[in-house]
Length: 72
Image (cartoon, rainbow, N blue to C red; front, side, top):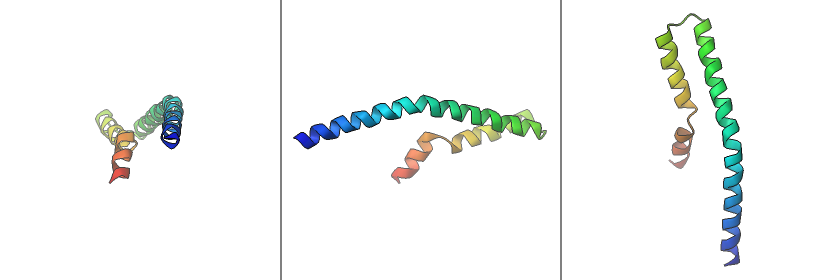
């Protein structure tokens, strides 16, 4: 029983730590997307192409995609 309680406490601690890091990572991701789009615009690509490539880049960095791949 003590092991179960310890597992719960450690699990809550890990969840709180992940929740405190998540906003920072989301901000970094948003900045990276903006830098990527600016770089594409600087190369002279059409705005529609920039939007499509940025969406693909965003999909590559999607946490959901990483989590689903790790479970397979």
